Length: 124
Image (cartoon, rainbow, N blue to C red):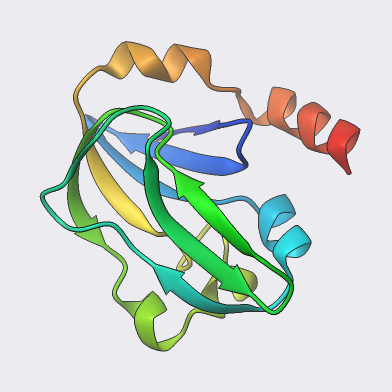
């Protein structure tokens, strides 16, 4: 399994042609206590960079962007009743959606963990 990161602080973990997407620990810390998550619709087709949903916290609302193009095949329904899962497990049970990649080469534009850590450190 490979994990990549976007400059918008999303992570995507790849298994075959399926990516699981969430926000990074850095992003959830910046947001504060998450109180609501709007997820994309299963079956929706997104292009890289498209709005995929919204995460709202006590501090702010922030867009969730798709780090790759593809079709939404599953959403994390747990977040509807327990949006704070994004805070407690941002890179685990707090994932947002699964997407079937339409162009795996788009992953090449994303950062690996070391590059993302340097990027987040520079922003933090």
